[in-house]
Image (tube, rainbow, N blue to C red; front, top):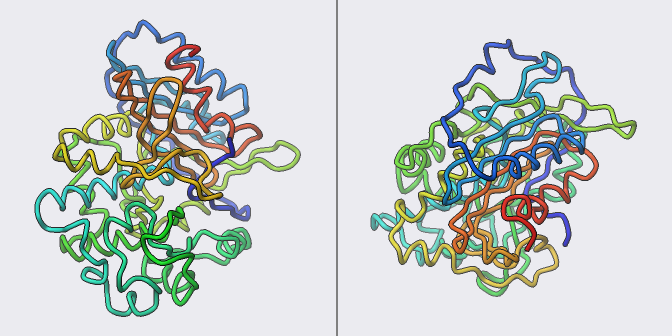
Length: 380
């Protein structure tokens, strides 16, 4: 299957400001002695064999929780990666945003059938075709037809250093306003990061908080997550991101990623987290949400769109994979040069999350999942 990275950024090389060693100090959570620890550690070994600078893994199975990390969080200072170190998680951020919205649905403050126009500034609605009729449900499930702002133009401008820190509104104005829709809302499914920029504005309207504050209040705090933050909040213990040149040399691109994702509300890809927190979030969905709401979240529309990539269906902020180990619900994510996956396997009562730093040859096939899942469960 093809590589699927929902949010990809490229950037020109610039001299990064390297944090002090104290920046990386953190306390890794306790975890269990696991009977499959050697097998899980193989994921770390495979990642290092590819040349990844850093990799972190969390697996929660019926036997307990296992955490592991390998490589270096900061190559220039030789800071060893630890399970408590945070990574950009790219579009796994969408699970955080969708869960916040669904919590508001359970509280009666929002309806999935609400027209998004009821919760968006009039100017935004006026400049996005279909925004008058699209619903919150269609927004969460990528059925609006709104074009993806992360297109070739955006990527080229980032690569050339032309994209500075922009708010959600500024990003929409620059890349989505007055663009031709892909289809009328509800007619098809096409993955679009623009939907989750609009979700940030909806959360702000309904809660009166910033999007990241709303996610903290509605999701990270009640789920007991301690290592997940919106990037604008300036988290510490954040792993550096490295891209590889054609000669194989690694270049620190952390400042490019930070610049593009620094403004509040980038619920399409702006959250930083740890694999342990991503596992904890997926495991907490059945307590955060009412049963019928979680069922709707997992009710994934089959994907036939050519840009679907590595998902068999999409629900409300959750991808569905049909695997040899049963269905899996979660998300892939990528914000260059970071990538992540987080999936829950109900039939196995197991949840796995992986974060990597580094765009190296072979990382796409590695993070796409099948090899990781085989390491977790064994050969099918």
